[in-house]
Length: 285
Ligand code: G3H
Ligand code: ZN
Image 1 (cartoon, rainbow, N blue to C red):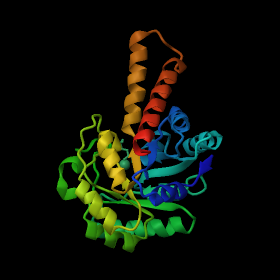
Image 2 (cartoon, helix red, strand yellow):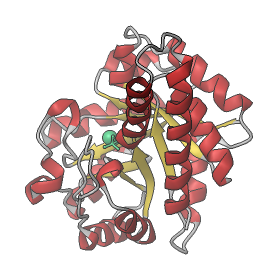
Image 3 (cartoon, rainbow, N blue to C red):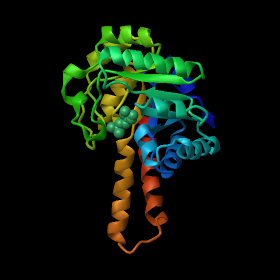
């Protein structure tokens, strides 16, 4: 069924035995939500289906079609799945999210100065809360999006400061906070080392659930430790695409005469399903 992100995150945050993670997987093609739903059913866990601003751009700039298809997959699934709009930088897209089935949005003003981030995010929160939409925002820079160098993984200077995080949450009213603790977006090898001391300090200081971005680059054990220390929403994108593309490549290399896309999309979807189920087991304890 289609459920609300706020419910999934709250339920996960209330567990205190280190099993409190909920995974959010990025959607690009229709095979992505199908695989995420199948993987969640296989693992017996809920999941968040998230569509990024970049994925919306890929689908022509409007969220309606990709959101409707993704929500339909969620409604038909036995697993509890929610719909989230991810890494929104454009205020116009934020407003376009209303009425498309999204129960949550990550509004990303992390590239702005602290003051500008607070002002833009507070406005997004006021807009969201007036419509019952749960809002996540980012303080510090996870980095690595859109081909930029992996800031978060290698530059402690961009990591989230606990005292600043407390002030940020109270000034903006966000429902969840994405923090920079050593991971970076779009890593294709799992070599990121998380700053566990910082995760603990943030968890103790910040009242709202914490979100780990760039989780594809983080080894399983580091993810387990992060969840045990209080990271609640765990975002995974690239790992699905690595599985998808490897399966497509393997099929086309073995059978270069293929014409029907279903011949390579079926194994690609199955590969993503396996990745989703394995990931859910890691964060599910
Ligand atoms: O918001 C999306 C995630 O942070 C995905 O990051 O593609 O590096 O797993 P990733
Ligand atoms: Zn992210």
